[in-house]
Length: 254
Image (cartoon, rainbow, N blue to C red; front, side, top):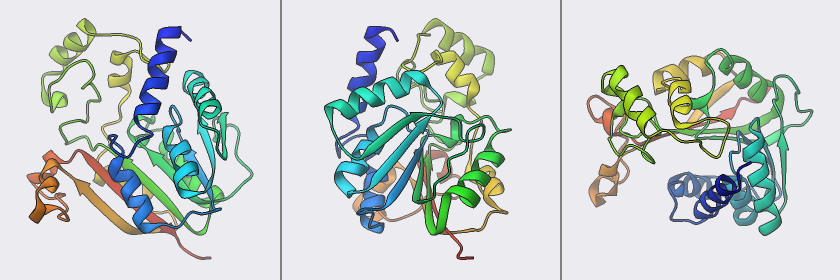
């Protein structure tokens, strides 16, 4: 990997290790609802490893972090050397190379919106039916497609709801600001690979799996106001303000 991109990846991962990162609500929900001391966790699509390391260090769990991007795993392993903890990072595609292990919690943090729609049924079926223990938890968080940050282009183009602008203009705008990311894709490739994930679409993928919903949280900037902190803004038209959607499910006991 290019040394500058490698350093960018390390900086990003370290920034998101803290409680004040953009993952603060993911961490808050995990800490307030789950006791993971000495439990087994799978961080599916672990990216640059910051959530895996945070969970191992802060919640006392053993974490397997899998990703299909070799650049991400390179950053993960460097981070693990810097922050030693009970995490195992691996370059792995679980569909082609299944994991013979079950977990108490499986995390998909900012992952589901990047997956090829053709892969999603197989991935979720494998994770839930094979890798998740009975009574185990599936934790999914992502920015829904209707929301202001769904384009993932805030780093280069500071325009909210970019996905609603004419597609040709958006592509030209991204192309003019294009650059390689830490992962395998450049910014334009990353944008074009988004699957437009939204709550209705995700619930369709999950409908036939042996899981039941225990938490749904739709977060907007309005939730920062004291009287609105606990409101789920998942209704029209407020759903267009949602910056992060959380869906947490437990596997039914057989």
